[in-house]
Image (cartoon, rainbow, N blue to C red; front, top):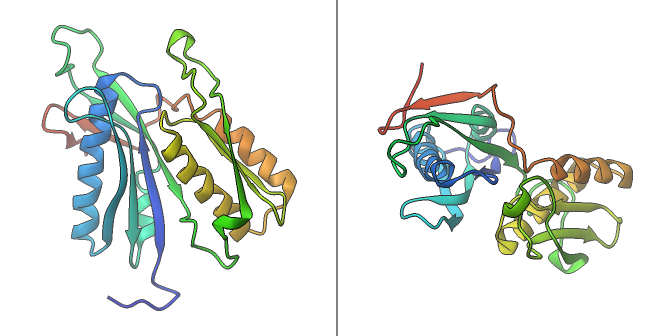
Length: 218
């Protein structure tokens, strides 16, 4: 595989169930497996960096994949957004709902971009997560705010229930802001955008899978 700067790409791909039920978490695990296999067929190096397991066996609250190689970004953007799985619940027989949504986001790794990001220059602050969900909203301090001391740029992550995962996501987003040459106002906009990430965009899926076999609808 050629690795010159014009062709070699390195990105992160986050798959999340948001605050969806166990069926959405099952879809996360299935989709992560599909993406790994598709990336391999395309000749990309795909590594599962982290996975937050759900309560039910074989499910995942979220998964973080690393993709490297020519065409990695184009590959990732094909699944970016909302992904729908249409299937009667395999976990709750007789349940009426059949549509399960998960979210996919493309991120820049902390070491990517022309502007170097040193972890030593970043101040992390734990915050109490907030947003929709009523009694199901995360009441613990799992949200993370990452501040780049030299520039004052700020990025936050609050959609995951794991503080460790939110820390990784906040760092990745901060790296993206630096790579883009963003200013403080742009960082504020980025923070506000991610504050709304709890609610996955439903109704306009970029990919749709069906049935227990998780086969893609063409």
